Image (cartoon, rainbow, N blue to C red; front, side):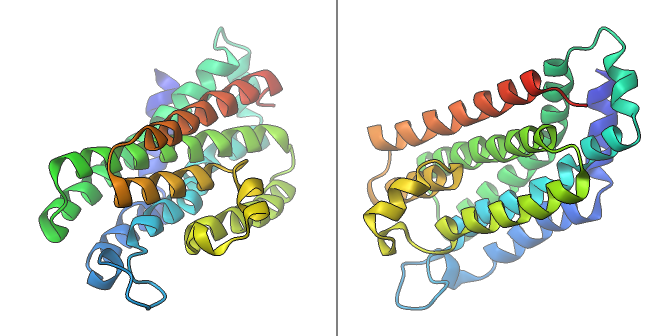
Length: 231
């Protein structure tokens, strides 16, 4: 658990991660128009989708420690011990998920107190957010394993995340069918689809499918990272 403790301390000391993980989401909760029904304004009712959008970009600085460990050859010393690649990735995943879990708990508490979320809605949306947080972290881990050069990794990742963010910035209904089908390859599609279903219909089989697919993304990204190697 030495890796877990070290990665957790590193995450909690990152000012960018604190801004994205706590400050921005709490600020969003105080903008009432973002949490009501859409009435024509650009951001009306989009608060539910802005939280995962912040998570999407906020997990990158949380996982940046792995890039630094690889650049400084620290990971090679770690891998020379009995530690497996999967164990290394999993402990780093837990270290990143703890701040994100706190973020989800804060958002759900504020949602229930300030916007009247029911207990069922709060528990379900919290689960959705937590699954997407895990997907975002695991994706960043897999991405870091794909690119060995930090500058190239960051540059290409910025473009990928920007493309994926369109699914959360705009309602899915505005996209043509062909574009929506293409978006289904992205985790952002499934969090957006899950939120759409939860807000419109509550707990349904379609919502359960979105949750299951997000869970599969976490497993797939971790498996890829462990097979690809961390150095």
